[in-house]
Length: 326
Image (cartoon, rainbow, N blue to C red; front, side):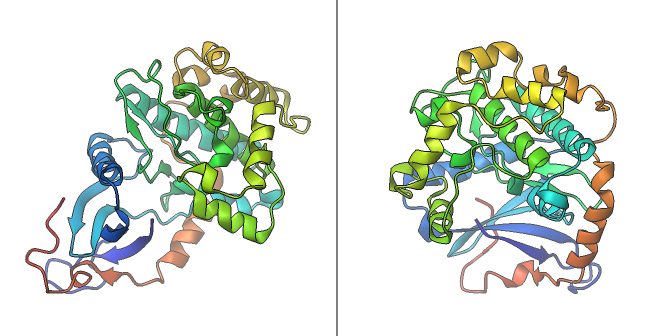
């Protein structure tokens, strides 16, 4: 879903330095073809209204006009996690930075678990930093409200195929154990610079896979997905180049059987905080990642040169009260 930089007019009505910056998530109404897709948009709004945490993008309001629905969100100027990884040697973070990011994400994910929300789309592009270096979860389009996060299961397949757990690949009902697996995939990527179940793709295959994201996987690339699924079902990624504690944690997160995986982490995300690899993390401090603060500031400085479009000029004048919320 496109996200654009926008600005609100200041108190004098002039768009300029006094106008606050926001991110505007734009959803074309014409793309909402089913009741399920409409329900998903309203569910995203419900979750963002409910979720108040430093590690989650701040939600301001919803807007609409004749052609689009909009989410007005906190503007995060520090770049996404993938940008930070790609600028690092080997496209991987050093262990200290990866640990800090992982700890910050765990606090946010554990909070969501406490309020009955499963995020369901953890990946590097959905982790975006503030200009001061705080990583935040964005894009709650696949998130789900649940009554019992540790027990509830679903057969719906959402998110990114490279992050799917074996039970998801098999079409079985899946729950928080699958989300713990996805956390392991992201941790692996941060520490190694590659996906643990990576399959070589041509440019066309990558484009097909990206276009297929969040859709019925049977419509995706006929060669790539079977190979990816086979590797996921093997549940045996290469852990040779990881430190002892990192490898031990990843080995547990990549336990093939979901019940056995959950038995290792019976409290979900909260159980992960007791792992040896995360022992150096300072859980009492802010979520700021000190190792990446300078890079976030650099990204924010570059972004500051980009001019946002005026929020109240986007909808035109053809509809009454075009920015009424939905």
